[in-house]
Length: 326
Image 1 (cartoon, rainbow, N blue to C red):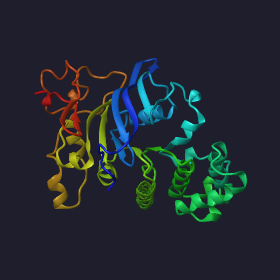
Image 2 (image 1 turned 180 degrees about the vertical axis):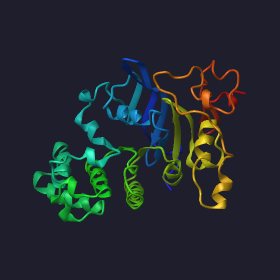
Image 3 (image 1 turned 60 degrees about the vertical axis):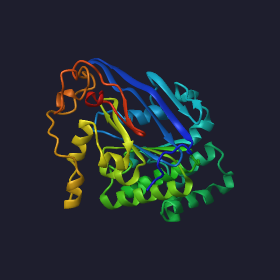
Image 4 (image 1 turned 90 degrees about the vertical axis):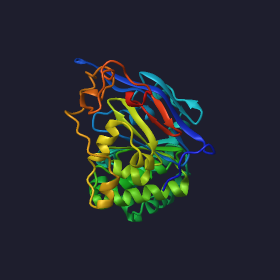
């Protein structure tokens, strides 16, 4: 189990009222629309939601791939610049990402050795003569044979490619790693191996993760805290164990109630089946008021009219829902 947030832990990154809107011919896509959270040292902060919820846009905006429309991203006490081109090399060294598809994130024309040497050389991690030794150490960390250094990505399996991508992220000794669905493109056995390695690295190196996924069961096993996103906003934030013990938002309950289980004990801890109608609306045409109200079985008169604000239910557990206004 990863460490739970506490007052003794240092804040690594703080996201404040972050917005990322895209102009399209059909209108403005509010991919991320005013979210706030922080990540502490040594923890995994999970961001969960359906496709179209905006969770990957959060990752890309933090990394500087997208420029924020509004809001702040404060990393280790420094406000990140609005453009990735203005970010100093020292900051890029500390902030790394592992993408969903390792096949597209690794240069097919470079060998594994060249892929792993690049960040070592760019950031001056080791001298040129020590690069090959460091590459061998990185491959050993991710449980790949040293002779894989001479292979190209096309010669590797999916799990092996992702292991190389993780080794590349670890090469710069980062202060934070963003994991954008790092196991969703892999088979079950490769997923298990990657997750085990990520847990091991965090325990040994105390690296915090922002873990983007659609898999709540995965979050139960690896995350310290979890945020549920829906149409660009955060619905609920709580510790991973609290989500399964006491889910509050109807959308959270809907997600949890749809998880397949294989034992009677697991069935008993699931929320009562929540029936929702329709699918997640287009972010170009977000419903008024609470954006979940067209699908919500607990919809009230106020829901289509007023967007709910974040309410602190108890320490570490917040929710955006009119059911808890009182």
